[in-house]
Amino acid sequence: MPWNAAVGLTAGRDDRYKQTIDTWLIPMYPGTIYVGGMVCINAAGYAVAAADVAGYTFAGVAQEEPDNPGNSTITNAGAAGSRWIKVRKEGRFVLDRYEPEDQSMLDACAYVRNDQCVAIDAANVTNNILVGVVTQLPTTMLARSPHNDIGTDEVEVELMVACRTFTGTTTTAAATTTTAQL
Image 1 (tube, rainbow, N blue to C red):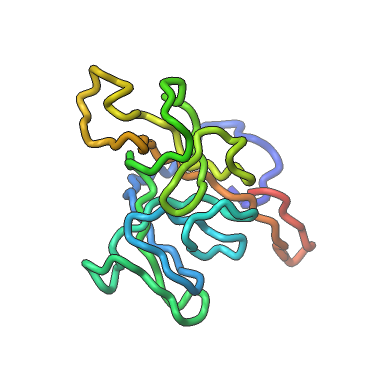
Image 2 (image 1 turned 120 degrees about the vertical axis):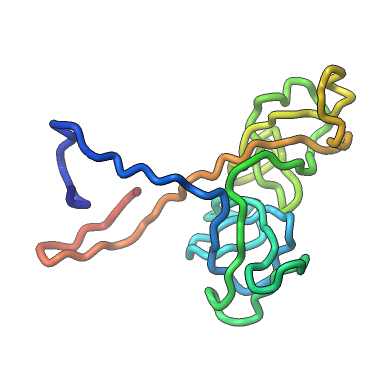
């Protein structure tokens, strides 16, 4: 099917399903990202330390550096894209929480506040960069919880990596088309 197919399916097709892995390598923007810290992709398409910044999209949680295992920081001192970072994009992570503990946070959305902290109340962030859904609260709130590894100022979040809006120009032999969203 061509990329610009104007009509929907009229017959079955091979869905071309691929089993995915839960990590990916992303080219870095100059700067430092800490292992275990949340990572965003900036508007130019490079990995940066997560922050509540316009144009950022949540990408996942930084894992050890591909070319330097065991290192706790990944630094790109060169040009954008000259270093890569390994990011885990699926799973549940225990992250610092900005707001006071509240049972109603369970199953609520969590948003990027900085590279180690999420806000559950969207009023406490500016750009509503979705990290995921709160799946576990501190054990003091959930007396029957089988998990005892969540601190009183933390929550467990199931990552929900979202796609970002692509605004660019695609050129074909016939015409130039501006893409509003992919």
